[in-house]
Length: 424
Image (cartoon, rainbow, N blue to C red; front, side, top):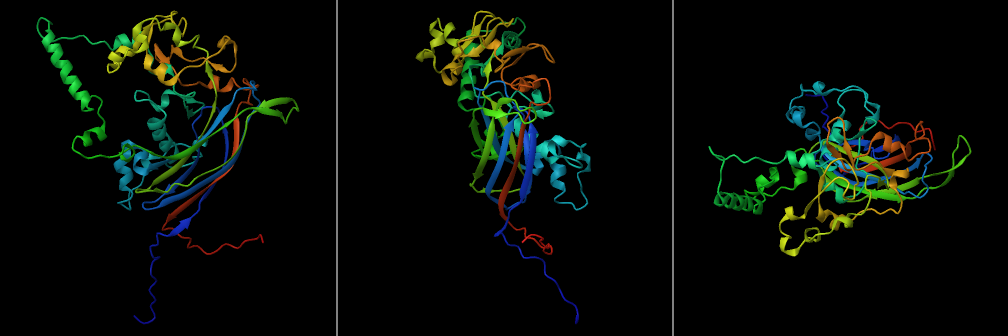
């Protein structure tokens, strides 16, 4: 029709690049899994580069000879995986213009910079913690510090496989096979052969990817529903340095980081989701619950892992009586896998660690909320404060100020009018 002008929509161009920026300011405690950015991404976009720079400093520390790690990690979480129980509801908002996620609204939470609506960041971090910071038999809420989920105290060690005697005995099974509860050696051998057959086929501890593999379909674990993808990270080590407490002028020690790091590997996003950044500060700690070296109990051939029994994992399990092993008197027997000692080593001190503020009270037998649970790796709020001069006060934090820039290739371009700039 004459006088009518048709305006065409923006053409799709995948070569456009956007560079969103997040400025962050954090006050965190040791071992807290602290998020510092959440960036939405669209299907088909490619993360080209991640560049961050920040400065971090601890409040005054007690121990001048105890180093710390500053860890930065990035993950991609698909929107539908943020709340697994509501995956279909979340997918529906991309298909139905009338759909919304009001049922998932949560109260304000400053620790996740959340004021209203869906707390995407907290839900994403929950999935990351569940898949990357917890064992199979643990839940995210099993370890928290001041409202945030807690990381472990450090690296793998020989206590990781340890269970209390009461826990082990509770798993013992009573065999009932018939009216007289009797069974023959032939029946036992048959059951053992069947178990070995299943173990050979990787079917004794099957997950969904294992099930698909039996049909000849191989899917990486990170592509399965609910599994966030680890994009990369950096760990920076530093030792405390001499400094002056600015409010008192008193000489003290503190840890200081000046981070400037980048990730350059391309990542293609196949679904709408979020890139989440996490920051963790981990002091190098020793465990006051470990009283001596594991080598002291290596007094029989089984502790030396005989070659003829190497294919039988159960022969490396060692049960130790309370007071007779490296943990001292903990009130219960315990069992651990001797292979872990050979694989991961141990820590060594020539003084009683219970007298040193740099040693945390782990491993320990919990009395609450569930008695007879063995805490081998997770710190408490009190442990996170004990490294600071003002452990009982307010100056027991790590402060961080920084900026992160993402370079993302996709379709989005700026269609708003340019804003007048006041600066030259």
